Amino acid sequence: MKKILRYLLFFFTSFCLKAQTAYPTLFEETKGKETPEYADVIAYFQTLSNDFEEVRIVEMGTTDAGLPLHVVLFDRQQDFDPKKWHETGRLVLFINNGIHPGEPDGIDASMMFLRDILLSKQQVPNDLAMAIIPVYNIGGHLNRGSFSRVNQNGPEAYGFRGNARNFDLNRDFIKADTKNARSFQLIFNWLKPQVFIDTHVSNGADYQHVMTLISTQHDRLGERLGEYLEKEMNPLLYQKMKEKDFPMVPYVNAWGGKPEDGWAQFKDNGRYSSGYAALFSTLSFMPETHMLKPYEQRVYSTYALFETFMEVLEKDGERIVAFANADRNSRKNQRVFEFNHTLDRESFKMIEFRGYESGQKPSEISGHPRLYYDREQPFTKEVKFFDHYKSGLSITKPKSYLIPQAWHNIIENLQRNGVNLEQLKSDTLLPVSIYHIVDFQTAQRPFEGHYLHSQIKVEKSQALMRFRAGDYLIPMNQENNRYIMEVLEPESEDSFFAWNFFDTILQSKEGYSAYVFEDLAADFLRQNPEIKKALEEAKQQNPELANSGPAQLRWVYERSPWKEKEHNRYPVFRID
Image 1 (cartoon, rainbow, N blue to C red):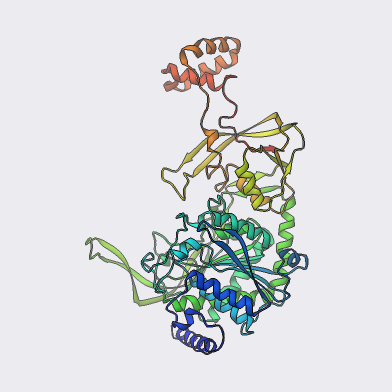
Image 2 (tube, one colour):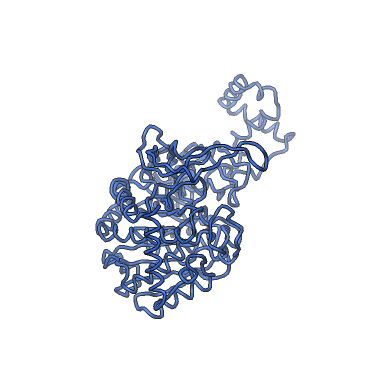
């Protein structure tokens, strides 16, 4: 703790001296107590853009708050063109702030860090191209107060977690219900960063660490970047942060238990920012400062982490670019993709955790036992960290997918995410594989505006189907194959099907009057003895079916030519 205090005193003195002459931030002027309002954040970056040729601000898309999303670009070569960056093999870093505006640490750290780069007080790789979203959740930032984060220690006023429509934007990266997410997808696929950082503040247990870190799950990331992240980059980040007197641990994912008993790595599905970025072969991170630490410590630790990233990128930037290029090219030809990863409880590593002794004492409210942490009893222990996940489902990619043009919302989502689609020029008869949804579970309570499907099961059949001019073909020879498979394969836990994009197929639109269909069904069974035999076998195996006339009539209808072909037929087709 003494080292941290010395580090903070050095930082504070240094920043105060800088603030006297050059671009002070509100955070510095208030000695770490306040964070600026939205208009002041944008004005600060605009000042840097006006005064330094290496900075440009662009507006890309809008938000649910009705205000544009700003992207601050830093480029010493003043190209400000991601296409040129990638043509010349440059490293692209993308920092996102204020996704939860009650967690503004990254906003203040980014303001100071970019300023210090421009004033040559921070060194960055010569070929670095950097993009910063100053405030992603603008609506939440405008909803300013001081009580919404009851567990957080400062700043004096801050924004709210939900956006202007009360969406949690860090659950919206696949479904893209918000204008914010749709704009972000366009920005991300414009930048194509090799490294992505999304700044946060944690909630949960109490411990000594100021900074924790979610690195995207390396098994899901896979290939060269996954191996490099696990074996080299993560160890280096933790080592260097410890040298800066901000020893990190992985995000303390110990809900319902004690941290000293160990915890599992957070699994960042595609709905989360880092999991979304990983679908495009990007090293992605969510720094999570500790909510109970004073605000100034949290901001300085975020600043120190930015500094640490720059040191790692200076050392390994060329390798990271090479790994990302190789992985993205490899996705074009990858044959089998893995989904629905589950924690491997047999595999773990020991990490150093600096915590506080916890215990139970009577609640002053209820009198029942309650959890508490005793800061007078700090400890340092080796704990288990479970950071390996196994594939729960493997699917071979098709040669192409086919999507009827009627599903415009799916098509628009794919286009925003950089997927190449080709429209059929004429009506065409094609052999396709068809998924039929045979079972799934649906959540009983809403989650971010949806009733999520899970435990999805399909059956596959083949048919010759006619597609119309204007329907869309998706060739599976793309860098973005991983994203395409993740959202279009219905059994994937973050698929568009799981997020209710196709729920209209789950409801039958036609039916029958029983007294009319009885005669048609009897005639149908006489003409199809094999179906009659199957009905008798089903009745023997299912007493409930055998004792219900309406159930047997429904059974026959489901297997008859009158049954509507669209019901439970997944309307994304595969050319295998």
